[in-house]
Image (tube, rainbow, N blue to C red; front, top):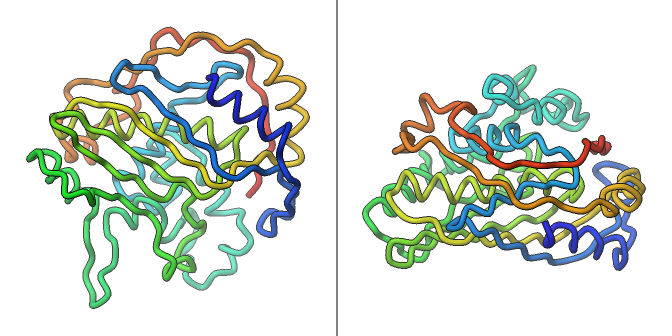
Length: 283
């Protein structure tokens, strides 16, 4: 929480106003932020200065690991976070590549599970990484990327957290995640949970111990209509101690995640939080 609140305060104190063309809103912006999550000691980075809907964040990362391309699939798993980008994004609605209601196109996990080869076919990046790590192999290139600049027009949104790089030291797994852009009041609350859960799950299904997860944000911002509640409400609240995340130990393979895992397989213990704050969402 201290890392999160320090970043929020830094944006309020030092940020520069930037006009965002995609959302037609101004953002108070800083460049470069680094956060670290101690997965080994189960310091679950869940925001406590407002109520956090952590199940929705976990549903998203599971959907990415499954390669989902439909908002309907995300909804069935337990999150509505992709509804607006699928069905209310004017640019995507007018895109000839959109296949109809709830279609998201080639986004996030859809790329990570089927990254196109130049001459046809595709590479399942996630499966390759799981296979290597399960054998104790780290070739210094265990990178799950959701970024394909040549395919931006095939999806409703460019990926924000676009790369996850796994490193194995002995039997301890580490993760470096990179995010190009972050809506700090809303998005970061989810992204912190997702980086943590991704490392925890990958360590569990590959038979390794989790270490630390390192989360780099390039452009961290607060939208103009989010500034007052952040400055006047959330930053004035005292944080509570970090809760713990309990993951069903029966999740033992990528196939398990693909086929039967639900949000019931995740529990949070000791989560104390302040009241919810309803921040505006920029589509």
